[in-house]
Length: 73
Image (tube, rainbow, N blue to C red; front, side, top):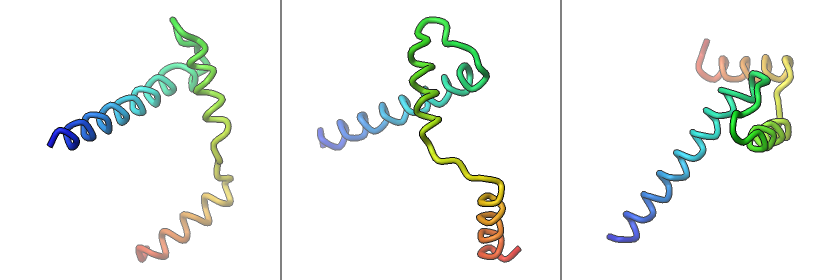
């Protein structure tokens, strides 16, 4: 019982941390502003986002066509 409570609490904290990081990124670095107190966190988030893969327009259209075909549009 204790392990399930600890596991649930840990997962909840991780989800909240991820949601906070996304909210901070959208509120500041995404718009080109520095974080007021800790600009290094904004720089870190920007570097992480720049490393993520991005779909090109052609890849996005191809993926959309595949999804549309699977759901019958």
